[in-house]
Length: 397
Ligand SMILES: *Cc1c(COP(=O)(O)O)cnc(C)c1O
Image (cartoon, rainbow, N blue to C red; front, side, top):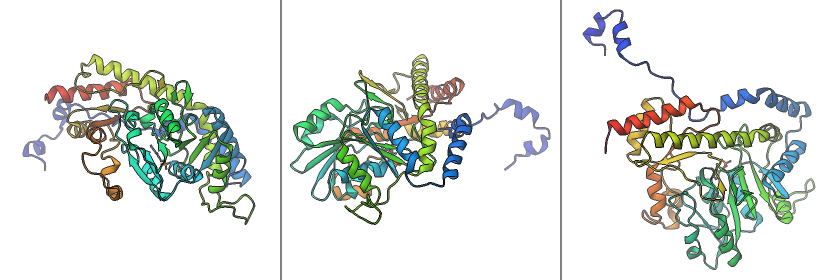
């Protein structure tokens, strides 16, 4: 409601001058800016698919599969309908199902454990390493039973999980490693691309991933030609020849339109990842200069790995207050993930409780993702850091 003073203050000019102008809100991710930079090529690729009227699999999907296989450094890649299906189909190709167990992290997107459960197998969670947010390799062996068939490490936020010890444990117990690389295309571990170290690597082309298509899409990389062959059957109704069904499959194909768009974007991926990584370094420098590094924890990259920063995630005290303040200042943030999977109703049947995985639970209360997309400007980043700094200096603990 207007105060009497406002009603008499006709010009309002003094009041306006006294109040700082509200700045334009930042974006959390600016896909319009990305599109503007590749518009002609994307539209040409889309036009090509329309001219061909070949929408299902075909040449574009085949070429994309070859290009990604060579990018990741594996002989085989199989496109499919989503990252979720990439995980699901990989497990099916390994003949994992009822009575089997698959080990993964509770601090991930729902699809990782969902894919395990969809096969009929039981997801078995192992807590995370609080520094990398990835599965704690040192706790995996304790979770292995006679029923364990696979381990799914998730390369969360764009940083590879600690694959060496995971592969050693997997070999010792004769179980497969299926990498959930949905957030990490282009990240490396010991000089090798993620998706090339396990038996299968699962990728997502959801628009917000580092390599996003124009809807849902996914892909599986594998070093094993027989698995690749089975994946190609599984994604297309178990059929190699029209109306002949060798195995029970499903409809989980990557569309030609998506493949054509992804082929335009793939050559830019490395450059975009470098931008993300530069922004991460600048955040670290600015936060240190603002004296904030003793208040909260910045992401860190262990020796021998490269981080592609699908998300730039910090751990902060009083997260909800900070988030609300940033929001009121036009700075969008996000939380990946506000609750670990073992406390979600969908997984209550597994019998875990609050307290089962303390590090995952602690992280879910403290993590905060800041904008880190390639087109973000230095001024934007300075504004983010200054606003966070304002919050902590005007709200001392
Ligand atoms: C995005 C994501 C998936 C699922 O990918 P969709 O393409 O959205 O189905 C799986 N795992 C992780 C870690 C993800 O971030």
